[in-house]
Image 1 (cartoon, rainbow, N blue to C red):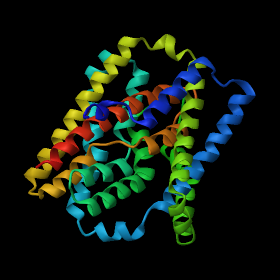
Image 2 (tube, rainbow, N blue to C red):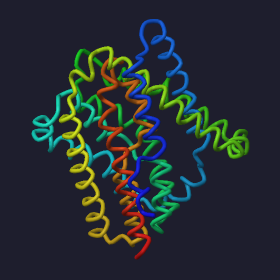
Image 3 (cartoon, helix red, strand yellow):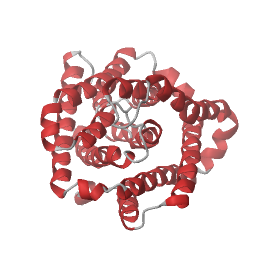
Image 4 (cartoon, one colour):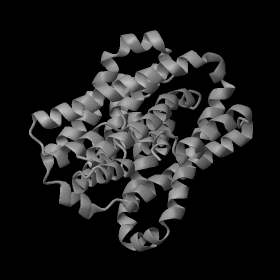
Length: 319
């Protein structure tokens, strides 16, 4: 009965399918160009729906717990990037510089929303605070992630300034998000009735971007540059980083005197990274031929965090 928690979730299986499909049948030429325009439009729609789904009442209700939210944000946007930089000598010994860029990108992403809240609820933590922290992390990530990328990552063959990155984030991600927030009063009931269909649209947007990114990467010789040993090294790095950030979130929350419910919220919101935000942001921030390589660490870490958090949520729930 416990075995399913270690199996890949449906989204991970679909992502793997897209990678295999792009490896066998990569989109090229005018087809690739058409898919690229389509994925850009779907990303804008994705962030519009994120804006429409985000409850302002839930965010306002949780703002008073500022110490908890500040600690989660520090773990997400300060401690995690610091881990990525401190482990640089080990990482560059194990993986290529291109994969290390993907690891640093993973480190500066915001927290997940849905799974952070779900695991907090399962573990009997402070769910309202989790809603607020995860939502705030994603909202601030629209600004902080490209800023941190411009400070920490020098993309090969690209000359992205922080201003250019911010402008792309504004018109491709932030403006649709704000439009969704404005439209929320009119769309809320309609979206609630069609939650399952909209979730499929969410996932389709991410899958489309992954297919386009890996098609480009395969055309550039991705699998010739990436042996199996490199993927195993990437897995080891992901395990080390996840273990370090989980230790830090637990240690800091206990040292600062948070309750067990708050500790659970800090643990799950502060140690996770968002695939839903990371995929579209990678497409905006990096050259198209590098996006596939950049996304590999995130896709691997995504599955690892889900499996480990499922186990930890069960342990917390039994306390």
